[in-house]
Image 1: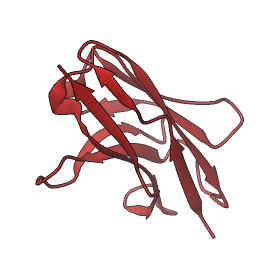
Image 2: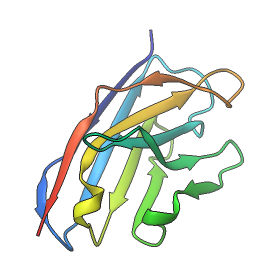
Image 3: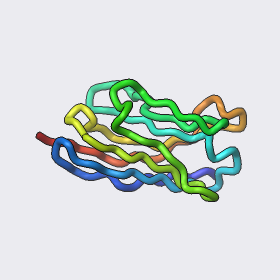
Length: 118
């Protein structure tokens, strides 16, 4: 059974930084097939950043240049380094993993709250 457990969420002031972590257990597919999503209050879930099977990364435009997705070498631990945080980054952040074909996200964590205040 795949389990994704996020940590690192906190309350910070504008301009601050946080690093989110996600430990995946029971996940036997390519560990590059993971990403981060977020859901702000009253809004739909938004894809934030992906790792791709070829090692490339993707970011949604609002976080480009501020967020960095990475993976610990040799482990199923995924990170999201978030710098220059803005109030609009306030959301519950979810770790997710794709299935066998590395296309569809099939596994989700419970989420970790990030709150950015001015």
